[in-house]
Image (cartoon, rainbow, N blue to C red; front, side, top):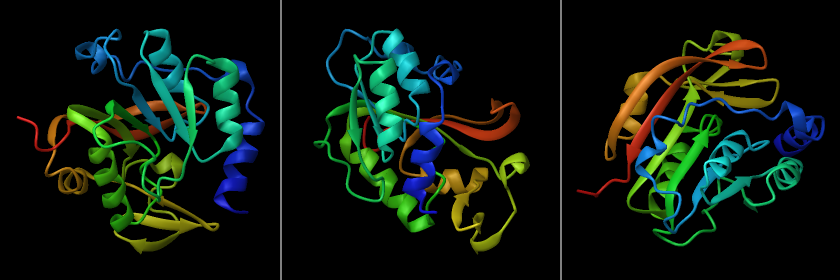
Length: 210
């Protein structure tokens, strides 16, 4: 089963009442005035959990995902949000400096190290000066969700049942974001489908801003 078919199948079975958010973004959004111009991009939005939270707070959001089923669910639940179907392995379809902030919640850990670096560079390109990136990624201690399982492709990157998944440690994240101004980097445990999931939470400012 291809990744696209897998995700479409997953989101087609998700009921609207199952789309709920936690408040992991709450410590970071205070500096952004909802009345100011410019969207927040929710990259790999899935069913729109974070888009729901941000739109309820009054922010303009563009929900982005490769799954058409996911975006249809977002449109049904949050018609005020714009949607954009995209593949993170391709250049983002947004102008340079056009986004106020980017959310990448559990969507940056499926790629090779080289491709991950390219995606982060694209995020930097579409952010305005001083723009913020807020993301959560798999931790190497995320044992309930496959850490250390499968065929090792490269450091902390595994293939299992035809699907690839990356797990990060602190040195890798520090290397990946070495040119960014990282204001928050902490390992946390969240609830995911009724199981504990260990993630890294990161907040960073677009590189080059002083």
